Each structure stands twice: as structure tokens, then as C-alpha cells.
Image: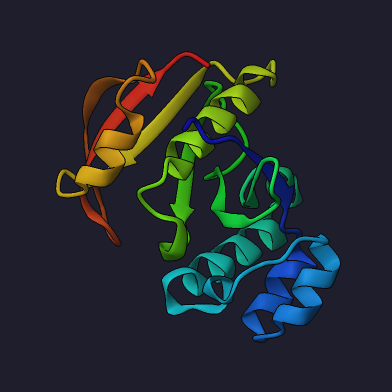
Length: 169
């Protein structure tokens, strides 16, 4: 079964609520049933990083993180977005994570598909990048079939060695 998702923004106030452990408030502000996963150690570092990023560059708010909601049932299955707005060369980097309760069901591919659709709708975007650890077989499999080409490698101080993949939106 091919999955589909829509993205619901997680503005700075929602990120603050999540970091404060207030899932009820975050649910009220987004209008979607965010799961307990949104309060887990697996993702709270991301909320902190994105909150700080938005504070430093308010333009990032529209780009960096959104809840992924399954269509048509409305289940929140993860989060996705870009690492920031397009850079001077028009490059955006995708990021996505699936709630463990919904993994291995096609939602990550649905998120990548929706991120690519979103990037294609933005005139400033010329390149979409994915950076993935060589040991992350699940993410490597997720981007397979989307036309990404391996363009190099980089060392990330937090994540270590990463393979770089790019494609046009």
C-alpha cells in the first residue's frame, strides 16, 4: 500500500511546548494528535536545535520541521522538513524521522515524496540533498528510487561520516 502524508507546521511556540513536556498544549496548537514520541529523547534534541535556529533566523520557521500526518486517517507518523531555507546556491537538505510505532510501513518514503513535492513548488530551490550515514541502511533504502545521485561524502561533527546524495527538485 502506497502511503501519503501531509505536513503540519511546528512553529516555535509548539517546539517550546514540546521542550517543556506539554504535549496537550502542542496538540492544541497544531490541531493534530501528536504522539508521546514527540516528547522522547529521540527527537527533543531536534526541537531544541530547530527552536534555536528559528530564533536566529525567523525565515527558517517555514522550512525546518513539521509533523507528518498520514492521509487520509490523520495519524501523526513522524516529522520532516528541511535543514533550513535554500542556501545561496538554491540547495535544501531533507530531514525526516518516523515514530517507531509506524516504522517499516512506507511512511518515510511518503515523507521524502512530499518533501520533494514541496521543494519542487519553491522557485528558489535548485537542488535537494540527503546526507545519510553509510550504516543507516533504512534511510539509504528510503531514498532509493527517488533519483538521488551519490555526489560525495562529508564528516558531520554530531553524526560522523555521511554520504551525500543530490537531485533536482
